[in-house]
Length: 270
Picture 1 (spheres, rainbow, N blue to C red):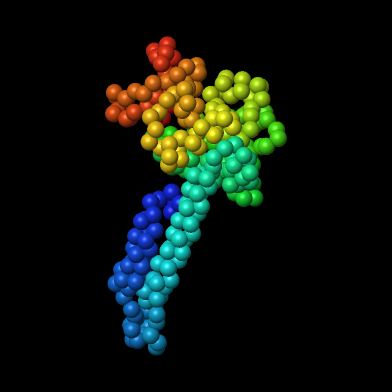
Picture 2 (cartoon, helix red, strand yellow):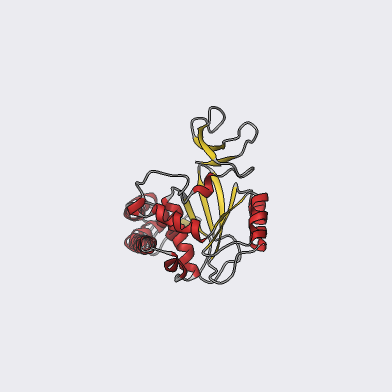
């Protein structure tokens, strides 16, 4: 759990957390749990015959190890972040994506979404998960992502239907299926009818290109925008425009609204 949190946090959080843990255990705990001395009352007011090591002293002894453990976990998290950044920045074409194994493919997508400003939780595991691979959080909304790193087969409607069931059961706002290949016509039709976003190999390549350092400052162009899949209305498929909420709990925050409003009231998080 700590490892996953530190992967999402800025690099300086780890050392600060290690210092806080060391201070809490090494200084605060001994003050909170003062040492018992010989003759102090322990139970039923009976005198103690031996000096008893209290919780505070045990905490103080353990403090350097606890702080060191946090630093080790932080170092592993930073090494993983570095590997993920290099993997994403090293992708130049479709072949680079297809040469990844499926677990590396999921990590690649985690880093790409993270650079888009999402808080990313990688639910998949190297042993396989059989469910949602990535959870994205942004502006208090949740998107569930299913990844299919299929090199020879097109993604069919079964995968889309399964994700729709999870989106519905978890009451998430969006569902996204990403593949390094293509989708069948039936899958595309079903996804459009149920507001599931699809990212195929071409959209994925453009998405990755847009978050790489050399392209991060480029002006957005909807005709070539890798993230344009997120800017289509989930209800009618029309282009979306940026708007600002004028009332309610989200007043002042930005969002995408359907260009056909008020005929269509579809929205997406900005």
